[in-house]
Length: 350
Ligand code: ATP
Ligand code: MG
Ligand code: MG
Image 1: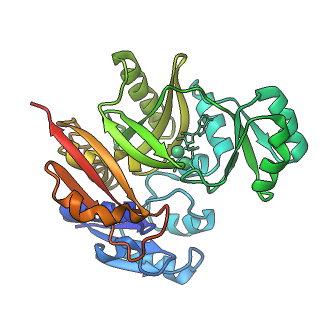
Image 2 (image 1 turned 90 degrees about the vertical axis):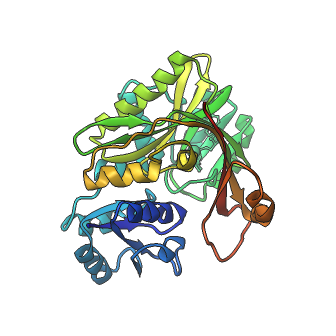
C-alpha cells in the first residue's frame, strides 16, 4: 500500500497513523521534536527541523501523499514538499487558518457570521477598536494560539495597555465577546471527488481554555443542526478541501457564529472513535488517499472527556468503568495542561 507522510507527531498524528495502518497503509511521521508520540506507532519517523532540506527531501522520497496534524507548518517547508507530492488538505486551507484575521475575513466573505473583529498593531489601534467593538472583548494573537494561549480578555478600555503588553508585540486581533449559550463543533470531511460528509455536531465544554468534554448529541434544534452542517460544507467547498476539517461554533439567539476552523482532525471529533463505524481519523486517511468517504453515521451517544495533566492518574479507575473506551497517547512526561489521553463514555442507541 501507499505511504502517507504526516507532518507533526503529536497525539493527532498518532491516531492518524493507527487509522492508516488499519487500512493497510504505512505512515511516515515528520516532527521537529525528539520522541514524538506518533513515532511509536508509525512505520517510519524523521525528527528534524522544519527547515532541514535534506531531511525533507528524504521524507518526500518515501511518501506518496503529504498531510498534517497541525496548521502551523512553515510555508517554506510546504514549498519544498509540494514539489514532490500533493499536500492534502491544500495550501489555501493552511494559509487561511494560520492567521485569525485572514480566517475571519474569509468566513465573512462566505456570508458566515463571526464575532466582530479588528486588526490590532498598536495600542492606539486597540483603543480605537475597543471604542468601536465595546467590551467585554478578547485580544488574541493572530498566529500560533491554541488551548486559549495568547489571549487576553478586556472588561473595560482601561485594560488596553495591559492586554496589549501581553501580546508581546505579536500582531493581534480584537474580537467582541459573543454571548453564546453553548459551544458546538462540526467535524466535516470532503473527498477528492468533492463528496462531503459531516459527523453529528458535538457540544463542547472548555476548562481553563482547554477542551474538557465533547457530548453528542449536542443541544441543537433540527434547524440549527442543518445550519451547522451546511455552513461546514460551504467552507469545505470554498477551499476545494480534501480531508477532515473542524469548525467551532457559538450557539446564540441570532444563530450560529463561527469561532474558528482547524484544517485537520480535531480534539472535539475524538468521540467518533467509539460513536461511528468510520471515525474522523479513518475519514481523513480515506480522503487524502482518494478513497470514497466512509459511513460516519452516529450509532451511540458519547461523552468524550480529555485527560489533562494529572487526570491520567485516574487511569486505573477509568479502565474499570463499563462502556468506557480509553485512548492514551503514550506521552512519557505528565505536565499541567498537557493532553495525555481521553475517554469515550458511550450509550448505544437501540
Ligand atoms: P483551540 O485549542 O480550540 O484551538 P484557541 O486557543 O484557538 O483554542 P479559541 O477557540 O479562539 O482559542 O478560544 C478558546 C475559547 O475561548 C472558545 O472556545 C470560547 O470558549 C472562548 N472564546 C474565544 N473567543 C471568544 C469570543 N469572541 N467570544 C466569547 N468567547 C470566546
Ligand atoms: Mg484554535
Ligand atoms: Mg478553539
